[in-house]
Each structure stands twice: as structure tokens, then as C-alpha cells.
Length: 240
Image (tube, rainbow, N blue to C red; front, top):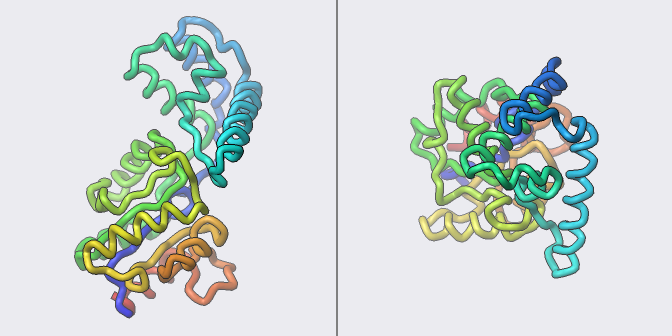
């Protein structure tokens, strides 16, 4: 069946995640001086360990309430680990979180993304998102898309599943079910939609269970429909 909609994962699919900047420790010091006028109370590694501990406690509590794959809100974790964070105004909290995340990693737009998204948009296909994400992800994606001459308006907001907005994360089937229903409301069956992601467990397997076609974005995948962005583009040209 011809593809009429394409849903994309974000990290590892649209954006490549790389190592922290070489001056990450200096940036960490400057971040706290700018926002709190004090040195950081924790080193970067200590902060990460404390956050992971807080996340584990919240995940355990959510799982005890019956949520198999829970999601957290990152600003809430930061507020728990850094008590002074709660005293910042909302805009400063948002900026602090964004910059804190950028200190921990680097991002680039995956090679071939801009060309393929632009081609799909020209073909008037519906484009959506299914991502384990936080609010800062939207800004990261917008920033990276701009490097390819695009913006987030290429994606239909009604076909976007962001885990932080829902309290559960992939591979929980409910996210894919939400997108499936919204596609069906537009007369598009799931087998006329393609889910593109870099992970078999989070992207390919749960999407396939909902009836989606899938593409595993991996050069060494055992999947029949798999490969890098160049191969994905070739597949789409034959399938749209």
C-alpha cells in the first residue's frame, strides 16, 4: 500500500546525539554563576547520579500505580536535586534546563534528513513525531532543523506524541495507538503509515504491533526495510 504518512522518532533518527563539548566543566561553572551567582553545589557527574536516583524513585512509584513505562518531567527532577532552581522565574528555569542539557551532549541533524523531509513535504505527505522527549527537545529539534533550512512546521502537531506530555514513554503501545486513531480520523489506515526509528524495541516492534509499516534506521539491521537516510529516501520514492 502506498505510504500517506510518515512518523519519525527524534533522537538517533532525526538528530544524532554526540559527546559533551570539550569545555563542558567550564560551561557548568559558568551556568551556575550566571543563574545563581554561586559555584555549582554538585559536580556534573554528581548531579547526574542524583538525578538518576530521583528518576528511579519516580519510575518505581509510577510502576507501582500500574504505569509500565513511566515518563518524568525533567524540570521537576532538577528542582528536586537543586533546591535553588525553584526560586528562578519560569523563563529562567526553562533557559537553565535547556543550557544544562546542552552541556551534557552535542547534537547534529542526521545526514539526509533535510533533503528527505523537504521532499516529503513537497509530496504533501502527513509527517508526525513519536518521541521519548522533554520540553527542551522541541527547541533542540527546531534549532537543528534550521541548520537544514527547515522548521518544525513541517510536522503536523496533531500527529505528535511527546512522552513528557503524557506521562508514559515508548515502547508503551498507547503512544502509537494515539497516532493510529488520529490518522484513522483522516482516513489513513496504519498500514499506509510508516514509522521511522533507530531502535527495534522502542520504534519498530511497538509500531508494527499497531499495524504500521516500519523502517529501522540502521546500516546493519536484520530488518527487510532498513538502512540509512539515503536508503530510506530511495524507499520512499518507490512507495509514495
